[in-house]
Image 1 (cartoon, rainbow, N blue to C red):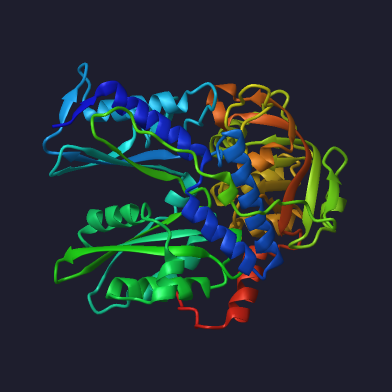
Image 2 (cartoon, helix red, strand yellow):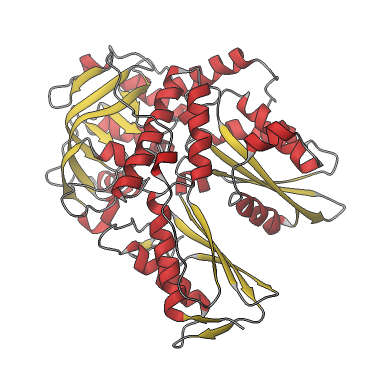
Length: 508
């Protein structure tokens, strides 16, 4: 009979969360490397190269792959014969203490993103607790734990439907994936749960994401059951949609499709679909009473040999002298290298600015957006000699409702984020002859290396959502929406869907 000690359990949780913050699962990174070598779209290939380079940099530097270090999800399978040696803490308490330690580790601080009172004041808990925990009581005398750190960009794209039993699940997936946009940072993995009840289907989808990436094996051996047939069909047809890396258009949107099913009521067909992004992070370990989990670092020689470098054709831009007349000359899909000063701000900062304007007040002292760019980012705190921690872009569509206000009232001429913009924002960009630039989601450590200095200039109490002034040098971005309102997230996938041409797109 195994006895699990409190400290062994807590330290294992903390160590595992640190581990997955900077080590990609090797199966995913190797699948992404294969996608890189297959990719025919220059824009998608460049984005994948940034993700792969960032992954190796994060592994070597032991700093987060992505600035969004996720909400912790724990699957805990407790053997019925296990004994616990604790000091008054329950298992959930121990999980959360492990989260608290991991996210406050001074050698690798992880961003705290969890908000309590979610429909009210939305106060940051400051230590990323509490985790979302699922338990299963099973035979045996061990405790098996699967941990994931799920980023908001991918989690926000989760979908659920209850189909009629006669409806086509494949048609629903092909209709739904394009509506998810690129905020989930493809290429990634789709987890699909089929059956049970509403909550069971979603849990199955989340559990499916923790399974090994093995599509290459399934392609080689062929399907042996209906679930494997579905995986292969969806893998081929989702990739044929042409969405591609970062939604720029290309051959690979998903590196795998994972499916779990469960018996369900005769009256319906519940289906949950949850994507994992380019910063997919999860780990499995077992405690048997012999001590804390031993987590062996992966062999970095197994990483794909990809070293991203900026395109020699990239336009170099001085942010300190840029004008509106300059930005109207930029073309959709053009690669830029930004140098100079830019301001940051995301959801909470935009809401605070909107409230100031609604009260007839101006911008906070020291904040001037005239002929400036705003970068949608919530960076990780720096450690040691860093000026800023990993600082990749957040999903730009969350700022769409504020875009016209910012362009109309502040003198702003450009925005930087990840993924597409919606029709409302695109029209505002066209009307104001502004521009939207895209940085690669999943390349946060790489992007942070372009930041030469960082200081908070407003809303310091909001932590990572404060307004910073960054000084950057050769920060890589792509023109995603030009001053005429042309969006590469519309033109790119349409072009590559036509090139692939394997299946018709299911109408919405």
